[in-house]
Image (tube, rainbow, N blue to C red):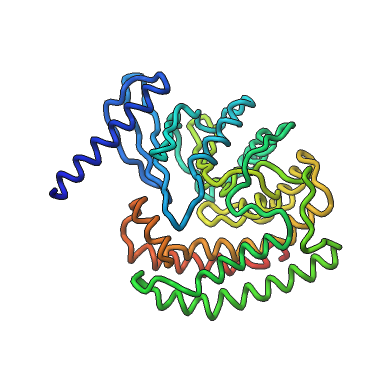
Length: 347
């Protein structure tokens, strides 16, 4: 079979999948499919129908990464819609065997960091509080969910350790190895020591499980990098493939550490205050929110460097981000910037 024939077969299979899902959802038949840019781990397509566009999402799977991305996103969005929350796409149909979901199409564009205003941050907080309307659902834990201070540090430790073995075939891998050894690992050692001292001062038990009433439903990987704003100023939040039950401190830290559309660190305390009021956070949860942010600056530095890992290369190839050499150079620069944010909330 030629490459052209293989491509035609893949296109036909994709169209057939779209036809099955639109029929399952009771929607008009697909007329055309267009690949959308921006999917970091998945393949996302605009499905044009005579009644308007829809979105088809195919989720990345790999034997080395067993996370149920479709299951997490479908459960979270279905829960949000059951509560009347309409700032997420509508779930229409899914095919678990094909790891694919069909959703409503959201008009809008990405915000830029310079555009971010307090109202946007409050809209994000409102969303978190809305999906946590009691009684909170018994969804599965989120990806890398943490239910003790020890689990937070162990999660980051695993990511740092994973970077000790990088893919020799990835561009700029030598510079990445140097950065990990000379900058990342020493910074992580310092951050760990600071957190342990702070936890002792706050009287936080290192291994103790977070009380059940302090666990929240987290969108995970939450931030304005996963949001669209329309012409009327309405925000819609996207991409919940890692969502689930988690520590609010992880939600807060990820929100402020994600690098794509950085949230100003001066509103960190405002975010914590509103979650404290809305979720009923206790003193231990508030302390974790404040203590752990630098651990998550390290974690996000590691995430930025995922392209240098063998699995990272496989996932990016599936998502088709292109321009591999330039991307790897850019990721190294981003990692330098991210690591430089350690300590910024205490300035």
